[in-house]
Image (cartoon, rainbow, N blue to C red):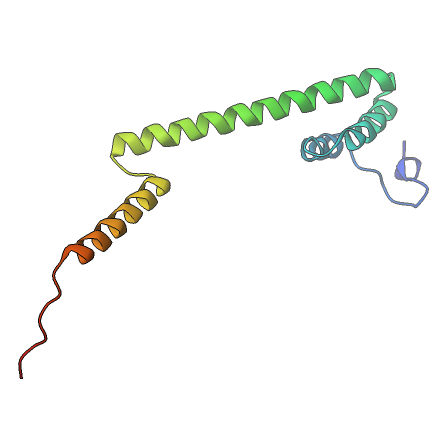
Length: 120
């Protein structure tokens, strides 16, 4: 098969199977329509039933999404454990403490007697 056989109607060379699979990774976060388009193209290139390819692509996208969520949750847990081990506070804890200190300072100012004006 020469290069002219692989060119589409517009004269451009279509993407390789690897490029389509990589595009599929990005499209996994898009909707079902984009996944179906990818599956249709893959089915055409590989020569399998479109319905079977659509099911396989949807299963793969679902698996990638689940794995991404799992990895995100695990990384959040790891960060929390590391901060605890190092004795470091999270941003929301620091913000809470800053607010509490400001409130205490305000209360102290209310309790302090006014200082007399300096004598000349």
